[in-house]
Image (cartoon, rainbow over all chains, first blue to last red):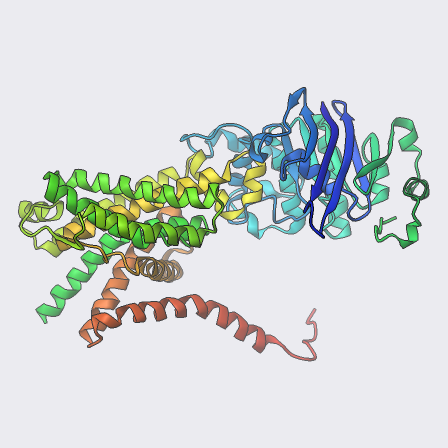
Length: 265
Length: 316
């Protein structure tokens, strides 16, 4: 599925602000893997997701999806394989456009867009059905502007948009971090449901260790641009937050209490 | 009295012809969120190309309009290239194209800064002769027909897949790029469409006034913004008076064309009241600055009024 080989990235190379963001990342995801990613601030979690999505070019290494080398493809071309949900609920949707228009844009992810009508009448039933499954009542407001929705609703809509046309890989970059706890829980439940139902290969960055343990079949921990811990299957299921904290201290050789990572228990 | 009436009729005619330009400015300013300063140059470009084609090549005036529009499209492509490929900030990219168009336009007119069409037939004088109308009346008819046609084309285009992607680029670039759209290309398309409308308008105005002038586009962007502001206010007022919110895209486009006509009417009235033509640029700039700042200032004032140290008791 996704194979990352020795990917490196340094920001502001050769200046006083030089920051080694990724120091030789190797990662292989099997089809249907749901991997949660944890780590402190500046560990390289978001950078890794951005490199996969093509937001910045990588310095060296190789990123492949289903054997296709996408390392040097621009962001908009990689979109044909990848669905994304950002941390900021404002970033994933177009506020000034209708809910159904947003969905119509998402349905055409990665396809060439021509001069046929941007939203076809026969798509609307599909949108209504999909919105109904979100359980937020949005199916009755399909022609409302997205700007009228709450942050949680927008994030749920973005999640739906990212998966409307099945992506080979779903990237979730702390997509519940900007939401209040109750809404965050709801969006996470939705995430779990959608990922399971559609059997999506997923990478989810989170700050919440409990979520990282509960969701998915595999967990990786990052620190200073490296993957320092990778656990899957039964071993992952039996993990506790304290185990993760201990692992972090072991692997990083740092006192967790001094780190600003603030992994929420 | 009839003198004033004729003057106002001329103002409406001019306003509608300029309204085609306002459609172009609307695309960049409102849909793409770019203040495109190419406009001043591409408006004059349309006029210069049109006049030169009619004078030197004896071209059919209708065909000259089409070619003027294509020339504007090219100008928009230059700005788009500077902005999206070379990543020059949009405002600066527009200024660069605008300033270079001044030289280009003079080249087109073989070094002359003004080309009169005198007695030559134009689309507008042709329509006037055919139906026995005055030049202003003919301009209004031609202007309305072309403006409505353009609104229909734009309404269709911005409803298509590509058009939707262009609109989405204006709202949220990150989002639409993540959905697989090359946002640079969308901005390029938007700038090309916009400037082709601006040039078309310049060519129409040239045929209306029967000359092209190197300075005819000066301040066009500001006139465009003024017309958009007026049009949106009109739409809001019309919506609250009659039918509820007029959100439809076609209404919004028609409103800015109307806004342009109203702007030129206001201008004609102010001139009748004794303001000098030379003062018009200052007048327009002040008008646009006020129109853009009033919402900001009222919001600040409201926030100030709403503040109280203790806060209100909750009623519930």
